[in-house]
Image (cartoon, rainbow, N blue to C red; front, side, top):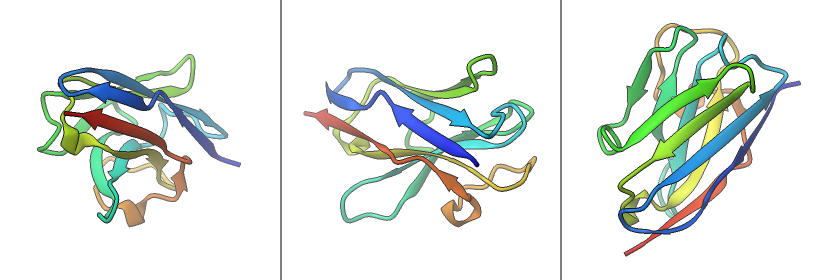
Length: 125
């Protein structure tokens, strides 16, 4: 059984930084695509970033240059380092992984099967 557990969210001022963690069980993060999505109130869930099994990454334009995805294979954990945070980054952030291994990184949330419970990130102006 695959379980993804996020942590690290919180309240931060604009310009600040946070690092989110996603600990996976029942799944080896180095063998599957791992992604971060976010959902703000009243908005659809949107792609933030992902890393595929080979280590290739993809970022949404709105976070490119500010956010970095990484993984620690020994801890079976994926991280999202968020710098230069803006109020518009406020959302619930979710870790996700698909059923099978893909080389292509999908940005459509419907292609992901496993989801964490989410962690709230609030950026004040």
